[in-house]
Amino acid sequence: MSERVCNGLWPITVCVLAMSVCLAIPVWGKSSPVDIVNTMVARELDAQAHKEQFDYLSVERSDRTGGRAWTEHVVETPLGRVRFLIAEDGKPLSANRDAQERGRLAYDLANPLAFEAREKAQKDDEAHARQMLELLPKAFLLENMREEGSDWRIDFRPSPNYSPSGIEEKILYGMNGYLLINRSQLRLHAIEGSMPRDVNIGFGFLATIHAGSSFSSLKAPFYGQWRTVHVLGDIRGKAALFKSIAKNQDVTRSQFHRLSVPLTLAQAVALAEQPSLPCGGALSSPDS
Image (cartoon, rainbow, N blue to C red):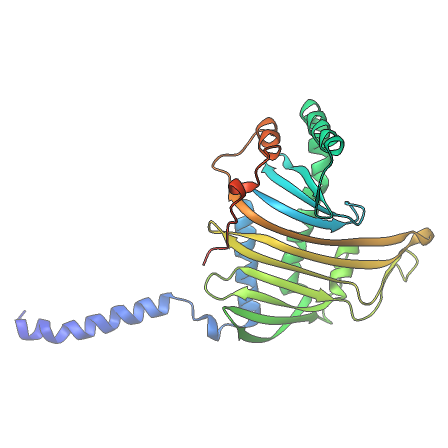
């Protein structure tokens, strides 16, 4: 083949290769909100299946803390989270309270099955969160997709064509809100929902979740892993026999440090009890 012909074919070859690359890359701007959310859900579930362990600082005010602001050093293990309380309402623990905390962790070390059973409730909550995430593209209308900073913002509201089953589904199904999905990685950045009207379960005989109940969650990337940095929940209502329903929490997490290997319970307790904060007291910032 002559040099002239080869030179003439080269620009065509370049164009074909460029077109092939372009066609291989999804054009998310032309995708529907359902496409974006389905891809996000798949990536979130895959990330949860390959989750690494971290230690971090947590400040929580919830029913668990009795309404106090607990600052805890949290160390993740395959069995669950080891928590060591280091301050309450911004004040360091007294020597007596510190000794009680160390005694509690010593009990966990001596009774690992009891620790694992207690942490199972936390894992159940995470399983429910996964179920609710999968519910989004099925039970809600996803609309008004637009750019917001580095995210896609997508509104959601209940789909009239879906019939929820189970208490968790019925509560979530009663909410309107929005998602923020990182455009470059298609990972969940934030979700916020609120209940515009009461939700009656069992015609109100079993439970009623009151209008104004709300939740929000914010995530950020650390060491390539998207982790929850803030959770705010306010679920109010009444259950059978007039028992009050309250699942209120305000949790902020920071100073994330990725653990190089999974820790045993004994190793996690030793790390949690160290006087320094995670990362030696240095703040780890989200990935840019």
